[in-house]
Length: 160
Image (cartoon, rainbow, N blue to C red; front, side, top):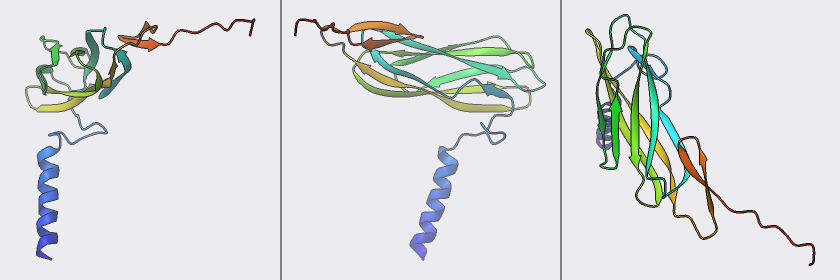
């Protein structure tokens, strides 16, 4: 019984520690909304060096909103954001760039920090995908902001 109680306390404490510090609405934000919280580049070629995605941030409050900081958790991810205050109802943006330099799956997050004169909030956004080295004979075609692999179509001869 003591172990179950300790386990319950640990789970509750961990959920508070790992959870985001926002608590209203579907996404947890009360002063801002973000266009999306996860962007999937799909399968991309390692030849596409920097993969970039723009997250749109809308001010949902009655006060001026500042995107005060964006924290990335890996040296392969950088971010830039709207530095000027965002008026109520207007939008700003956060551009997150993944330095595509090795093959394999990637999933990197950035934490966006918002401030109004009366409240501060934060939320995580994620970039994910799979980076592959092109094989001989593969063509690379553009899809959105990511480069996607496409195998060439072989024509069959009628002489078989």
